[in-house]
Length: 306
Image (cartoon, rainbow, N blue to C red; front, side):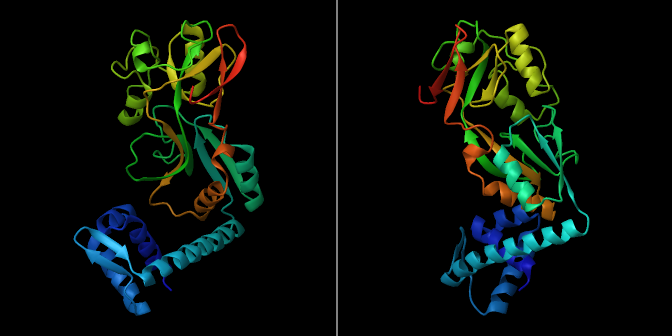
C-alpha cells in the first residue's frame, strides 16, 4: 500500500472533513479528494460516506483506519532506525525550564541510546521555544500561542496559580480571583511576544504594569525582589520565599509537544510516540497536588479543589 495515501486517509478519518484535513496536510482539497478516491479504487471498497457537512467512515473505512495507524507507526519506527543507523543521531528540544520527567528521559534513552539530545531554554518572546525560528526540532512548551504552521500534542493540562512572596498579604489564601489582584503590579512579557501568549500570561487589562521578564528564572526573581505578581502552572516548582496560590477564574494551560507541521523527521516522530506512552503525572510534576508555602514559612499541601 502507498503510505502517503494511508496518511491522507487517517487525517481525513480524524478530522471527518476534507477541508480541515487538507489544511492540516498543507494541501488543497481537490488533490486530497482524488487521493482518497484512488485508495478506494485500489482497495475496491468505499471508505467514506460524503455529505455537504463532512464525512463518516464506512465499516470498511473504520477497519482500514485501525490497521493504517498500526502500519504507519511501524513505518515510522523503521524510518527512525534507518535514520539513526545513517548518522541522524541528534535531537534539539526547546523548553521553558519545564521538568520533562525522569521517566520520559529514560524511555527515550532506552528507545534510542545512540541519539544525542540537546536542550535549549527558550525566551518568552517566542512561546515555541525556538521552534518557529528553526533553532530546535521539537518544543516542550505551554499553550496558548499562535499555532500557525505548528502541530501540537497535549501531554497534560494544568490549572494556573498566582506567584507571590511568602510575606504577601494574599499568600495564605486558599485561592484567588483576578479581582483580588486588580491593584497589583504584574511582571510583563516582551513587547514583541506572541499576542496570544502575552494576553494569557500578562495582566488581564493592563499588560504593561511591571518589569519585563524573558525567562522562568527572571519571573521568579522579579516576584521575589520586587513583589510583583505573575502566573505559573500549578505544580511548577518555585524557589524558597515564594508561594503559588490557585487562581480560580483563569482557564488552564496545556503542556504540549510542538513541532513544525511540515517536518517529518523520524526522530521527532519517535520522540512524540515515546512521550505518548508516559502517564501525564510523570511528565513533569503531578498536577494533582500543589506545594504551597504559607506566610509563616511552613509548607502544606493544597488540593486544587480548595
